[in-house]
Image 1 (cartoon, helix red, strand yellow):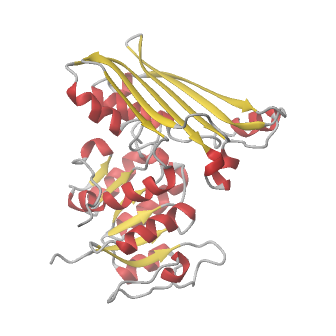
Image 2: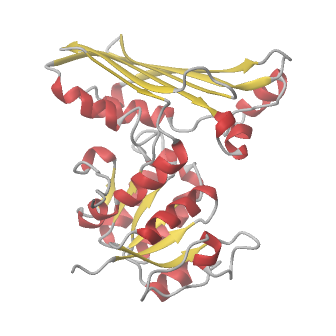
Length: 329
């Protein structure tokens, strides 16, 4: 039997813990270390913090505050990284992982397609190649629903003229942190103040547009785009969520239209992809793909593909199809 991949969990928040629990259940992965400097997490036994028991033969490490120490002690082959959305914030962490000799699969939204607008990308690619590791940013969105899945569906088209993407999420069924992120309960003025920070609402729609454009041969470097984010109000005049709309234009023609609605009490949650092409393709996932559990799944499922890949900073377009794990009857 092949030895399991030694993994370090970097970030034990809500998403990181979900990734950790799934990784702990996989026989092909040995979760041997964790790092998180947050008060109350550093020093805690990892598997106790995750609420699961380690498999026989897998030690129970304490969560380290210092990731470089954790890397040096555990010598993981891969880091499951879930600490932030913004590449400028997490780039030093990713560089530390690369210099520690570990591949990285990260939830960082801006890492899903970092080649336009993120100067950190070139250094990350150089560090990854210098240390013989691979770095990937992925998740349910960006990373799958509004980009990789759409590219895959286009594979049956002789020509693609335009793609329309719609994602509707009922945040009333999701964690409170996400509800705050999309402005539930704010006034209109408070919403606009938060939106002006650039760190509010859904992060990663631009990365989805660029990844999708690249996959379809609409050069991402030549894609023009416009964005709009607006609050959606409830009967009491307070915000119940946000609507984010983006258009991607290539050579003067709109080729991508993307809409995300994240609302408390959203009607008909779904993921929808419409391709105007030859032949046309129209897919609807009623209820939508649940973000937290699906993000954990794609991070863990990508591990063997990333570990086997040539060194460098890559996107989902560079990998063979990432597949789930079949369960024996």
